[in-house]
Length: 472
DNA sequence: TAATGACCTG
DNA sequence: CAGGTCATTA
Image 1: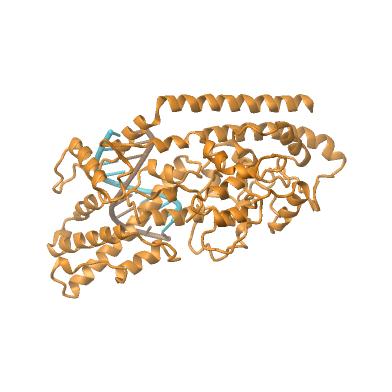
Image 2: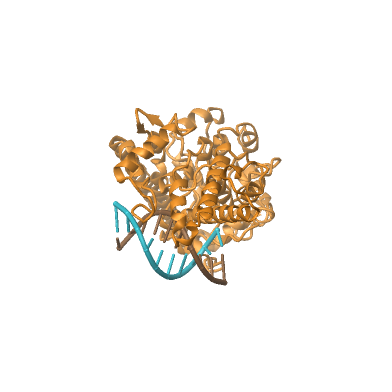
């Protein structure tokens, strides 16, 4: 066992240092340049080179894009001597570090635990945490219980031990949440459920939260972690390693609470408190989630500075997209109809991006647009039928039926203040459809392309608040 | 060839 | 909303 432990430690530090140096490298390389370039490159407009009156080559597009950015209402903070600044993107750096850490640790832990369980566990099944018996989940037998497309989307081997029911513990708490068909949307524990104002965060951190995602802050004692791992195993009631789901039969979240309290006692400041009072940054809540790790002694009072030093240590990387992510995406649509994948990555920092996730997010916005344009066309045609002659009569206000339809779709809970800019864009879109149809341009099979080309230039920046992993 | 968007369908 | 298909682009 000691040997294994040593290996675990070595591997731990090995990955730790490796990732650390990687991070430095990337920072030196300066993300601003590459990212900026990439962004500009991506900002090419759709339908370029198609029929229509598509004047302007790529260079013009480049400049036009910059212009549009400059005059955009929310873009002042983003422009820097005519160049787009994306320095903030650098904050994404530690993500890989976390993955490496988590994977290495869980691999090692699995190794240790296998050994451990085959010896000690076989003799006495005394793995108890508090009053709650721990069902040792080898992961194998659970794997096929709920086949999910989610699993298919992952190539990492760690997924093998991460069944889906793991996410469904939140089912009972928020039955109203799942109102749509979300075959690829994974449930998220009620931690950040936006509409439940009086919610109390019951767990020290969400079930899927990784204690090891404390990241790279100094005052952690590896031995304590190892101790905990050995005590409770990587699966069992620990149940929160990023790569290791908790046991299935934990229907009540409270069954987890007691053990935690019994073992460690809660931090001086509860997650609920922070979630309630520090909502603006929302950092407090997530930070607490990352910090409420038993055996990890840390001054909660210094949370602020801690979070500043390691903005991402507290982030709670998601394996899949949750209903909250969907909701957030819909709200983002009020600002951007054509988000680049970079924007998506920026505004979903708690999502572990891969090809599949990116596609799914892009698909979401594609679906959003589809609905949007369908509504526009429908209302434009209806207005024409109703005898509207002047484009100026085509307006979109918050009282408009059109807006109500859109708001119902993207902001069903109606708990978000839709920006005025969206109304403007909607109105422009409606007018574009109106004139196009009025001029019988819709006889052209590709008549909508011209409209799309206009609309895609009207994106505005998504507010910073959306960068929080906690839904608004 | 990979990424992306529109369109259609369930 | 997801799947699939097709077209476009780099």
